[in-house]
Picture 1: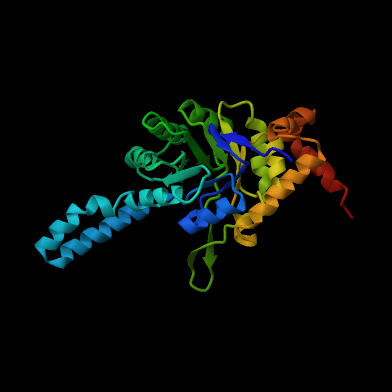
Picture 2: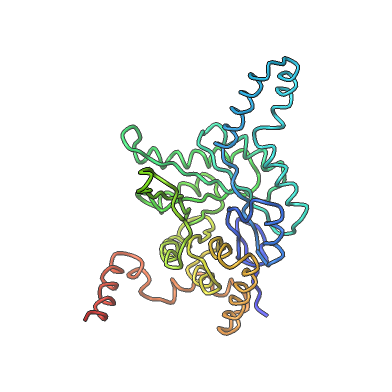
Amino acid sequence: MADLRTKYLGLELKNPLVVSSSGITGSVDGVRRCAEAGAGAVVLKSMFEELVVSGAADLDMAILQSGHPEAAEYARAELSMQLGPMPYLRFIEEVLGKVDIPVIASVNCTSPRWWVPYSRDIESAGAAALELNISHFPRGGDHEVRDIELMYAHIVDEVCARVRIPVTVKIGPYFTSIEQMVRDIAEAGAKGVVLFNRYYTVDVDTELMRFAPAMTFSSSADLQLPLRWTGLLAGRVPCDIAASTGVHDGISVVKTLLAGASASYLCTTLYRNGISYLGNIRSELESWMDDHGYASIGDFRGVAAGSSGNADVLLHRLQYLKSLDEAAKYQV
């Protein structure tokens, strides 16, 4: 039987199937079901700074409106237990008591001052690793492009200097130089990078005439972008790479590993097919390895770049010309 064990962020995973931060991993029961279905690791649903700040403002207003000094005094004494990261930390502790796979916490902040204290608290709660979900939407004008990129590296540096658990960073594809971004993040101390974040999108409601959230599930075609950049970066940057977005089945996982990824993040396919589908994905990966004579994942990770011969051509500019050649075959 194929050996599916792999290392990601220095953690021993029984397989490369990592369930992404999502509603699926937002409850103890959801995480438990992922572990029972065969996940190698889980990334807990992110702790968002906006929710913490909003909760603090709501409670403070309730205290002011109560009109009872004793109630206000009691509430403020309990403030540190009710706000901040405490509910999230309790969630981590509960999860750790139910599963025996690595649990990666996730934090998403907008104010630089919160990254470090939240990260320390998460480490203290026992998380095996920490995923920083850094997303800054530049509006132009006041910020130079390089300043924004360096902000990411600065946040990583601040966090990595103060925690001992491995840190990975989930980034989007919208940078002037993705390779330079990943190098900056790795040099700042990150042990891994996740390619790529799937940002929430918007639509326009033509009846209400206002913006509305849009469906953000991925398609299998979305895998092409992380595959390309995994192939370009694997072995060239000093950190692990996890492929995310468009990984829908076992063959998708095989592709990410052949490109050089250490782990594959799963989300949309579990919403569509159920958490138990993790078993199908694992079986498909095992079958492919058996059919191709591979005993372990390390035997074929990154092979695509070496065996293609023309990988550089396909991954860089001439890929466009090749696509035109392929499209010409279907002209009528």
